[in-house]
Image (cartoon, rainbow, N blue to C red; front, side):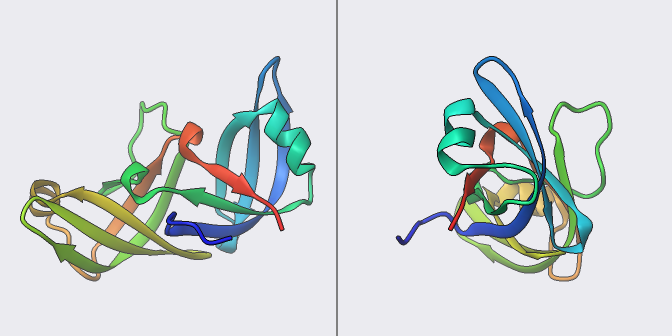
Amino acid sequence: MSLSIRNQLPGTVTAVARGEVMATVKVRIGGGQELTAAITLDAVKELGLAEGSAVRAMVKSTEVALATGRVSGLSIRNQVPGTVTDVAVGGAMATVKVAVDGGELTSAITKDAVDDLGLAAGAPVVALIKSTEVSLATG
């Protein structure tokens, strides 16, 4: 199967916390960084997720926000540090590629945000991803 989701990081499930309908799944990606995915219990069951399961954490580029440093007082669970490797700017939007431990993330943000944050190759950033925007795949 081919997907349009650019951001696909391989990892291993480290914990599954089940609620009544939803679960949070912790995934360790390269470099020891941990991501949290909030998915349905049906998805946990259908994918057979348990501690030690190999997965790919996937996130659409439009769901990856960038900051110039860690942000406190925020409900976003996933803050992944990295370094900008490329910035492609169009008339209104831009794509920013970020090298992170375990792979690469692409963020689709406005041109104004790139300018305001002073983003360029080599700049340190933190990718911010809500746990509800992280999908998991097996196989």
